Image (cartoon, rainbow over all chains, first blue to last red):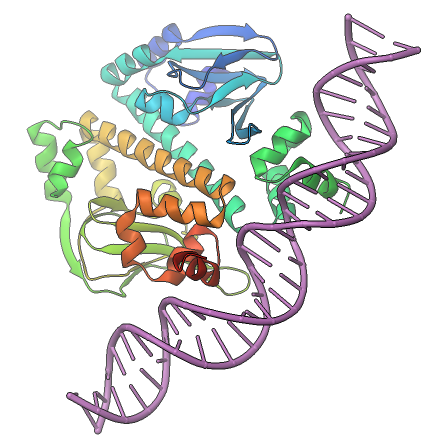
Length: 187
Length: 187
DNA sequence: CGCCGAGTTGAACTGAATCAAGAAACGTGG
DNA sequence: CCACGTTTCTTGATTCAGTTCAACTCGGCG
């Protein structure tokens, strides 16, 4: 899916706004393993993943690697609190596959928000979309058993369940790798 | 805090926009126990709580009452997925205290979004604010013990910890009432 | 070939849920 | 203002889902 189509799925941008948006968007290919945000660093770019897979993560008190969120094809990828509030990120971000990305810088995006009401609207709708995604995960995590959470993942993000390493998926679901392994093998 | 000041804390609205916003906002006092949204009903109003306390909740498969979110003074109160996507709510909403509220209807708000770029921006910033709140809770719930979650609540929303009934707080934190009672009494 | 990270399997342990029963607080009507 | 019933909270005993720790398997790659 083209960046353009992704945007149009939220709001119908006037031609001029779309052109400005495309001018400000930069395409880039990066290999698996690329770390594009460190903990403590402020996230300056909003990415769109045309093709690929990424995750945000951190190390907890016990030094264990914990996946916070996955990002895959045809979605934005961003450290939400860091980018939108321009403050240091709590998380690292890295690519799990070779990926084709687009990005726009915070500065440029702000300029576009100022210039085009329609792009501001796109921003609003994008935020509410992310919000409902997070609310969905919160409910899954909070009130479901390990098995149910895994089923939630398969249903909601089937691609991730098969493309990401087991350990990452487990911590994303808030369970241990061993437990997930047992679930997969059918108890 | 006045509605006006709440809005200004996000974005500096031009006078005309603020006047339109205030014209569209309706003030209302409602008593404790008022149910203002049913499961399956579409949330048509975005509330601002000048003073009071409310919660969203549902009944799980076992018929147990589960609190999803609390809303208190100087914050908006809304069934996020229902209001912003205008689809049936998964939750009930009710007041836990006598409250003074303002509200604006979905229709009116859309009109204001269309008319004033500045109000669209307010909407965007409000969404990102809610988003970071939910992300914060998700992290607390997913990776912390029952005791730590309660401490998170006390720190982040101290008023709620003292004003809401124990059973509601417990289900909000994803633990049982008994466990919370034990935590409060210091294990 | 041998190493290394990723995944699997087993056994013991534990934090929190469940089940059950009683105490305290709350509000409503006489 | 008290009595009664209802709801909210506490406390104890038992159970269980999922963690932890440890050892082992498998597949890829230098």
